[in-house]
Amino acid sequence: MGDVKLEHVSKHYGDVTAVDDMNLEIQDGEFICLVGPSGCGKSTTMEMIAGLTIPSEGEVFIGDREVTNLPPKDRGVAMVFQNIALFPHMNVYDNISFGLRLRNYDKEEIQRRVERAADVVQLEGMLERMPDEMSGGQRQRVAIARAIVRNPGVFLMDEPLANLDAKLRVHMRTELQRLHKELDTTIIYVTHDQAEAMTMSDRIAVIDSGRLQQIDPPLVCYNEPANLFVAGFIGSPSMNFLDGEVTDYGFESTYINVEFDPAEIGVEVGTDVTMGIRPEDVYLIEDERQVANPSHQIDAMTDVLEPMGDEIFVYLKLSEEAHADLEDATGVINDQLLMSVSPDTDVEEDEDVTVILDRTRVHLFDTETGKALSHGIESMVQASGAPGTEAESDD
Ligand code: ADP
Ligand code: MG
Image 1 (cartoon, rainbow, N blue to C red):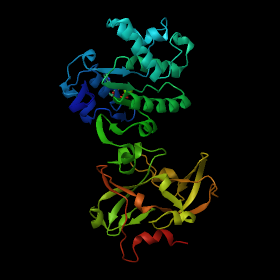
Image 2: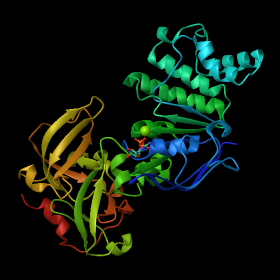
Image 3: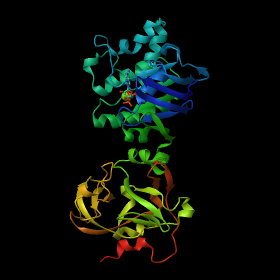
Image 4: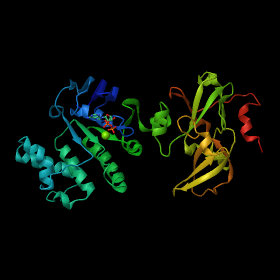
């Protein structure tokens, strides 16, 4: 049984709260990624599931058993770490079978399990090799095979690909998904890399400062982030944020207004809100026909261009003033907007452009609490002469 449950689990190290009241329910057979910035408590959470760390408060369940204080060997879990420690003087077969030999499994059973594991991670024909005759990716597969032979109900992997080069990492992502399909067991995978989490998991648990921010399928985290942290962390490049206020007409800020009826969205007039829009949801006016529900037109000037091959990132300046004056208290520059356009777009640096936002992709967050208020704005206030029209009328 590979269900894993954390109930009100916290871990304190002196004054540091590494994990803060974590509640997680992971279904048998799920591939879950714990994702968040370095130091947010991912490894500590994992260690408490593995039994390497005992929680300060709360309870851990695996299957139907409470395992909070059980040693790792009694939990039916196997762990793969970032730093693969293979025995350098043992060949692949002996490395993979080491744990089984230690537990006195009989020889045929060991051979059967090693061969199956080697088959799953595609190491057939390499069982006689020594670790120093293998690439980083192959060594990592040995480490995974060593976990597989133990037939764990739950695989715990803590940044197992972090030390591999970029190309191999992408390849291993596919391998791990295949492995998950083949083994049909629970995988709990720790990474600080949101792209890794997005591509592999059934659900992502986004963690910040020891606290669970959201646990949802990747596209739900992407399209309906629960708060500002998730919105900024998931997706690369990051979502654009602009601070403003809710008025009778909708969202108003220094450079961009988005009209809506506050009552319909359920936000009170006068609330400080942060508007979020992803780079791919900002369009040049020429591309307006691609947008079913465009915002008002916004005048901007192109700054730096970053051609990526399959798209161009265009940094837009919304004002002509020096950036230094426009930083808010947190150092965020409030007059910049990043736009992603197709590679054949005719665009240059330091050019005046007019852009629009896809209103159905506009996110609103309570600036104070960070909580999401709305994802997408469909309706429009009918009143004419709304201040939102100013943005397009100054030339
Ligand atoms: P992550 O894996 O997300 O990078 P960790 O779980 O390793 O984060 O750490 C979370 C926080 O707990 C960090 O501030 C870290 O310094 C602290 N921490 C982790 N382990 C210990 C420990 N054994 N002693 C003291 N502080 C620790
Ligand atoms: Mg860690």
